[in-house]
Image 1 (cartoon, rainbow, N blue to C red):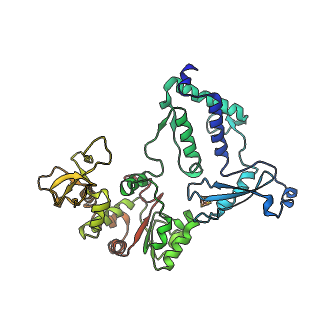
Image 2: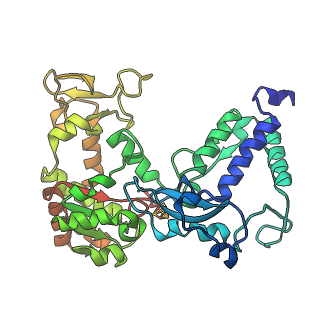
Image 3: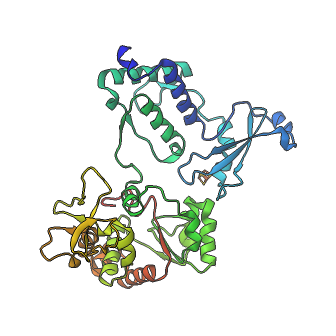
Length: 406
Ligand code: SF4
């Protein structure tokens, strides 16, 4: 008990925290309990003032739609998209009233009584469940410290509220071991931060402004269907939608072109396209120099060079005007983009040249053999993507994600 005092962990606090998490785990949205029957439904009032409304969210890890819950006499009777949210929720979100009152919904903790996989459980009370969890947490902290607690969260129905609540709760206990990256979004996490400076960049409102939309291993007509309207609007405005996917999926059915690909070979296609883009100079050099990490220098150990090791943002670049190494955000510089602009004896390389080094072996013939996409299609796709602008790649769970080297 003494050891735990330092973590300011009180039983009441713990129970409160776990109670909230437990509640959230069971409640995909705002909910109440009660018995549904035809008589109740017949008595539902018609006057809007008889209802209470609550703002909530759909916890699904697709669009995190903002929902409004309509409640009458402590009973959830209707879910609708919040009026001021920029997309409409889907039927899955609206049907949460049915989830909440479904007879098969788990509403009580179950304790496993058999071996794993045997399917033997017995119902226990919430108090019993919370006591057991509390005991386990206290034991782990006492025996191993907070590092003994591992928080692993992510996709599916566990995202928009519960992940962060769980993390906050364990941080309150004094911290826990967390995983690096993510089980489901490693490629996006790895690419978004260096490109845009943050992991989450909501681009849904810019879709309609695109003129070339490459849905790469992604099926937004289904998986982002609440704002598929933005894709449809882009298409109406003259945008071309191209789908790269092994399956002729729902988006492919609405797209201007479907490019089938051998599953798991998307990275070969991406490298082949990068090779063409670099060799034909189809990139926006001023933009890359001014706004991206393509100009950062890496050493022979592939480590990014920094002016100050304690300052993570102090990346060094080679200024082609002063012929010196300077911080990337210095005023009045023109950073080298490719190694050809570095001094001949430079021990460093630019990120852009490192990317090209990876792409260079991926000749058209090699990419075509790997992906089963004809060479002329690869060339045309790359040319269309780089000339029909503004263009965007819609890539989420597939393609580079959950793929070796993705
Ligand atoms: S699109 Fe549907 S399932 Fe996804 S968050 Fe919105 S309402 Fe929920």
